[in-house]
Structure formats: C-alpha cells, structure tokens
Image (cartoon, rainbow, N blue to C red; front, side, top):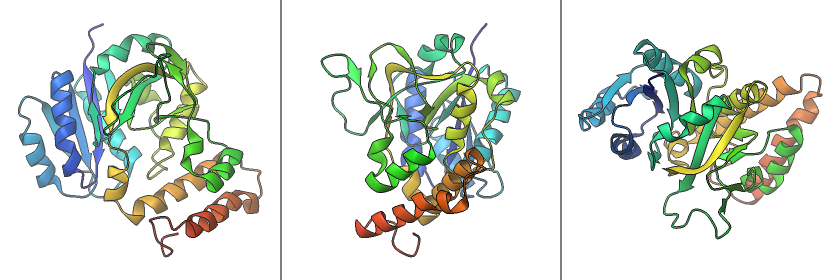
Length: 284
C-alpha cells in the first residue's frame, strides 16, 4: 500500500511556533498534506503563515469558534481522509519534526497507535550511555491514586519510565502532541470531543490499549517546546484541563463517591496555592 501522510494540527493563537512546525514538516516530509483547525478565529493570520510555506499543501480550517482540541482534530482528520490520506499524524503546533514520521509506519503492523520520543527545547543529549531515555511524552496510566499523588508532588510523577533506543515499547499513554495511526483506525476510533482540552488523549490511548495497543519507539522524532500552546490559552487552559481530568475520572470510576473524586483536586488547590503556582488564586 502506498502511504499518503496527513498531518492534523489544532492551533489557538499559535503563530509564534507554527511557522517552525511547518518548516520542519517541509524538511522531513514535504509530501504531507497538512490540515490546521484554528480555534481562535484568527484565520487570516494562519493563512498568511501557511502561505509562507508554498512547498507544502496546507489547508486552514475555521471551526466557527473554539471547539476544543478533540473536535478540531476530528475536523482536520475528516478533511485529510477525504483527500485520500492513508495515515494520520496528530501534531502540536509547538512541535518541530526531527525525523520523517514514515519511519514509524512499519510499527503500526503491531500496534494501533504509535509515537516517538519528543525532546525538550535546547536538550543537547538524547540517550544516555546505556542507550536509554525517559521521554516526556510517554506517561503512566491515569488512575484515581495516580491523580492523588500528582496533586501532592506535581507532574514529575507522571513519567512512564525509560525506553531503549530503536525498540518498540508498550506504554500506558502517549501525549496528544504526536500520535501516529492509520486513517482507517482513527475514523473508527476518533478522539472523544466531550473532552474540550486534555485527557482526550488519555481516553484515546485507553481504548487503543484495549485493542492492539499503544507504544513508543525509541527514536527521537521531534522537539517539543512544551507549554506554548497551554500558555497561549491562559487560565482557560488550566480550567479546561481540570474539567477534563474530573470528567475522565468520573467516567472511569462511576461508582466512586463524589467526595472521593473531589479529594485530589482539593489537595491540588491547596498545594498549588502554597507553592504559588502561576495560574493565580482566582482561576484555581
């Protein structure tokens, strides 16, 4: 089967990073079709960024408002499927490709969803002397207990552990910043648009894990300037994160008393307030 790659990108005032993202796509897979859903309504600005990359086939979509990440991806994915794409890469606008995504396509013969290692901005060395790396975009499974621990110690608890260079390793969850799958699989198992922002990738990986699995390849595929998309949305992103997290836990533990479901968030409110986190007390 001839592979035709489609790349779905959801943006929200992402002009500052999108240009580098598109440049990296042109450098590593210029034949890709790119569909961008712009949630801020600044369509003309995004179209200008796209026009600055004439070598790429880029379509900018207007969802008609801020429809969230999952619905934005679904809109872009439908456009790419109609254009004949066989494979779909979900990519954050603050990710720069460092390798051709087609390097990971053979691994989709073994799992339904695959990702590669995303490194941080300015990270000089990737794998250690033993050929191991702890990728930031592979996470442990989200449970009520892990949510409770995260509320106390922060997100550094979330990592899924080390993986070896070049190997395919099953992981509980991959970040939505870089997810590769066949278009056919995605159309049968799309992101759940009831999650406005965040945790749609957790739910998505849960469902993939129940089928043929979700895994990471020990290959560096991109550089993630983490937090840029989050900061561009300000406090709304923080609130959307917590709403999606609570919605996910309620769906996973329908019989757990609501008081128990509220406990991790109450602890987080306390710990983030004491440590003077950036959102501010009004948002928390």
